[in-house]
Length: 357
Ligand SMILES: [Zn+2]
Ligand SMILES: [Zn+2]
Ligand SMILES: [Zn+2]
Ligand SMILES: [Zn+2]
Image (spheres, helix red, strand yellow):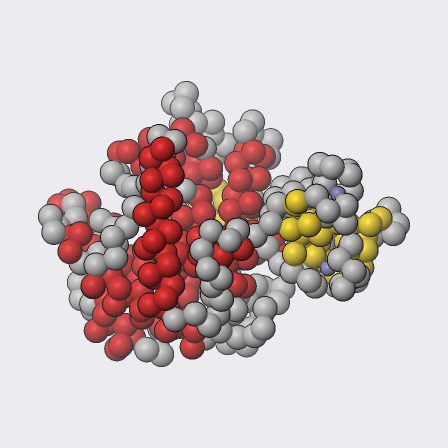
C-alpha cells in the first residue's frame, strides 16, 4: 500500500480516518483515488483537500454511521438512498452486530476488502457491482456470515437451526465465514491445515480469483487454461474435493503447485495462483512506493522484471521477518510450472485491463 499526505504535511495511511497531527477528518477520495484531508463544507459534505482535485464528497454510510469504512462518494451520486462507497456497495450480508465481537470482525473484513479493491484498480480490472453493473457480467457481491451452531462455549451463535458457513465463491457471490476475522481461530486453522500464511486479505485474493476465472476464462479461453492448469471437468470438482480430504495433497506437490491446496483441483490451482499474483503486485507496488526497490509500474512492467524484483525483495523481507521472529514474508518458491501459471494469470489480466484507473 502507499502512504498519502495531509494538507498539514503529515503522513496519512490507507486506513486513516483523521490526521493525527492536525485533527482534520480524512478518507478515500474516489476522484483523485487517494486518502486526502476532507474540509467540512456543511454537516454532511466535505471538499477534497487535494488542491488538484477539490471534489465535493459525502461519507459512505459505513463510514458515517458504522465506523467500518473510510471512503467517500462524490456528492449527489448515492444510489437509491443508500450511500455506500465503491467497496461497501458489494455487501449483501454483514455480520449480526448485536453479537459481541462482530463489529470488530466486520471492521477487519472491510479493511481487507478495501485493500482488495485497491489492488484490482491497480490492475485496472473490471469489478462490476449490482449498483454499477457491466452488461452481461455477473456482479461481485459479498456475504459475511457466522456459523449457526449449538453454542459449545467456543463461538457465540445466532438463532435458528445449525448452518455451517463455508468460505467460497459461486456466481459472483463471495461468502466469508467471519470466524476468519478472529485472529486466534484463524491461526489455529492455519496450523491445523499446515498453511504458510492464512490472512483475511489472502482469503479475499483467493476467492476473487474464482470470480475472475468465471468472468475472464469461462467460455472464453478454457482450452488454453486447461493446457496450463489441467482439465477442470475431469475429475469433477466434487470428486477432487473428496479425494483431497481423504488422501491429502500428493507428496510431490511442491514440484507443481504454489501451495498444497492448489493441488486439489485446477480451479483451486488457478485461485491460489491468482492470489499469489495479487500478493506479488501488492508487495511490489508498496516496495516501489516506499523506495525499497527501483520504481515498478504494475500496469506496464514485464512479468520477468516483476518476478525478479519480487524474488530479491522476498529474500530481503524474509530475513527482515526472521530478524523479528515472524513467519516468512514470501513463503512460495517460484519453480517453472508455477511461473507458467503466474504467466497465464498475468497475460489474462493485462489483456482484460479496462480503463485508466
Ligand atoms: Zn493534518
Ligand atoms: Zn480528491
Ligand atoms: Zn464504504
Ligand atoms: Zn477456492
